[in-house]
Image (cartoon, rainbow, N blue to C red; front, side, top):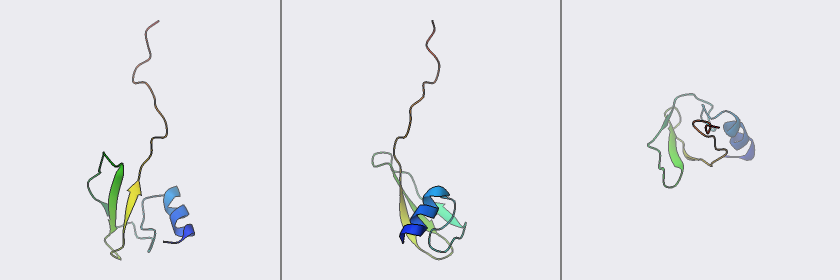
Length: 64
């Protein structure tokens, strides 16, 4: 995967970064490693999505 393919995929991760097919399938998420294997059912390429914590938000505001 080249730099442009990677950048495009990170902007819109709903297609194969290799062939641009939307026929991709995510495998079970590994919560300990924050990774999720993905396979393109059209071209057979495989890659791993890597997740990072980007924000935190309280579920309910504290009472005054």
